[in-house]
Length: 176
Image 1 (tube, rainbow, N blue to C red):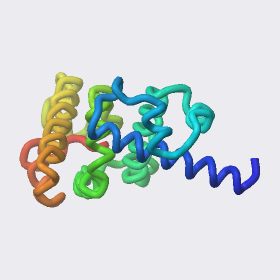
Image 2: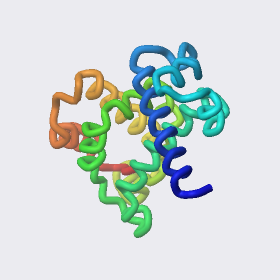
Image 3: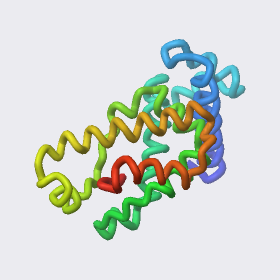
């Protein structure tokens, strides 16, 4: 495919994803149709189906895009295998991308979210290396609940305040 067609395809998928996210703010996933999206995008159904098998694949692509962005926030840590427990950059990212995060939670992907990097050394010190899987689940669930509450309130608190809340509650035991 030539560059012009690649650009056109990328622009079409970006438009489809943007409209999909907007529709999700007003409707549930099962209420959104390919026709709804194509009508608002001004695209043919064939363009949609050339990029996605169905609405659910589109939802997965949106999720993958957000998760990739979050992974990039912590790329240096992942590569160098260290844990900075820097939640501030995540809270800044959430505040700047509220619509995407609201969409992520609305689609229920937070239930599938896995903490990939848990500070095992800190856990050994703090929890005598006991029941770590429970501590991970407690943190994941609590963190998601705090982010959802923050998003529901329109992110009124600053990212710095949210970082302070997390640190006070969890003392920096995990990272993403």
